[in-house]
Image (cartoon, rainbow, N blue to C red; front, side):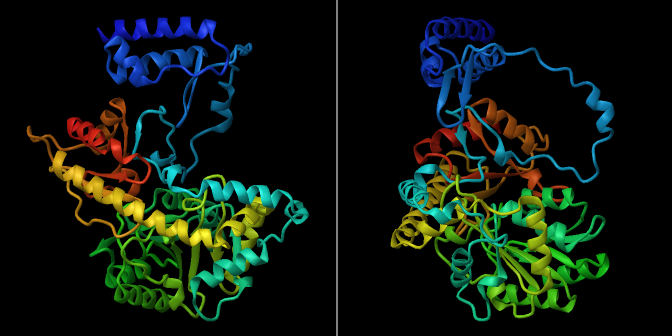
Length: 466
């Protein structure tokens, strides 16, 4: 029956597209499902067929549109590449689900970014207009970045001893991470990481040829004894941590835990990369970054503005001291040369105005409301899903699925995620957040990316998939 419905929907859309102009918007999945009495999966199957035929195109967040009728050349024969490329390179890592493109009306709880409605779009648009009128915006900047923007990041730390020359501007936190791993380690070196942790850090470490030494979190942070043993037994001189609102778990280290971890790093004369990705997403607590307690150059600090300012302005800062900073700047220069001066100027323009503080306040209140709404929806509609610790900042809920179904079959988080995606909800399965085997079936839900008016629907889909 569903195949017949899919065929009828596809035929209808072909006839519509045949008479419509290129770029015309087609009915949404909901409209088509209602009109033909079909489920969203059936509609999406029809749309997928038309996309494959080149009749329509989908634009994430916008809808489905009639595709240009220009002639599409036959697919090139690239079979020769199989032999030319050879075996897949050691250390390669798949792209995380947070970068997945989905149909426009799928509920997006997999994303690594907040809803655009939570971002200061008007302020960014005005900043682009102002910056475009400045002659200096079109001159090549220093490789380390605009001095005033570097000074802003340093001032934001509110810690003594830091200078703007300690900062390097990068095109987003991911670029800063990758360059740091390449600069401070060589292929085959070990790197100590919390587990679970950010998939992008795992991927960057593997791409750099590093061997990940995982350390579990104990009460939200790696225990000093476990961390000490990991550095001692592996001989690692590099670590990666997220002390504040860790992605994906939302954990926050206490002041004592921060002191303990820094003491271990100092004892092993090692570097630790502090990823302060959620600096602007605090709700109920604003801990000082670990780097503020470091006076000897052990901590490399990364903070990005991409998620809190604009997805179109990929600007981050990396702060480090001594020869390590020079090596990292060199690595960034080789890969990126420099960050576009227009983007740096726009970022500086926005964050330097009073409206930036107003935006952050509104953002934090909105995030708290969304977090609480999703926690409530899960408790009401899917009590079998456990959120052990409600995060006090960040964008995500880290949730444990039941260990097994009613028939005793172990729960497969990847299968649950596939089921929800087929039913119109995109989530992130927990396995990709572990640098080694997962310790159980987990999922990550981004409460900032999806509209709260769809939380109940999302939870219903999730419960059904279980």
